Image 1 (cartoon, rainbow, N blue to C red):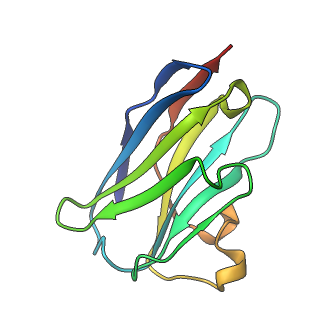
Image 2: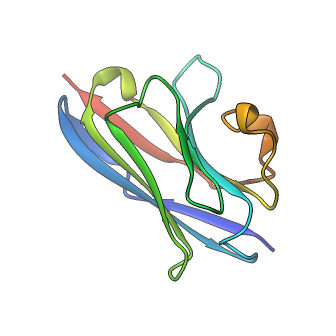
Length: 126
């Protein structure tokens, strides 16, 4: 049974930093694709950053230059380092994984991931 458990959420002042972690179990973590998504109140879930089994990454425009996705295969853990966090970054952040990687152009689409964590609240306050 695949399980993804996020941690590290919280509240930070505008311009601050936060690191999310996602501990995975129940499948071969080093394979497939993994990503971070977020959902703000009243909005649809959107992709933030994804990483494949080779360590290649892709970011949504909202996080380019400020967010960094990484993985530690030895610890079965996915990370999202968020710098210069702003109030518009306030959302529930979810980690997601899939045993396969779909087409590169589609990796930021939530429908391409079978496994999801429970979410972690991140709040950027002004």
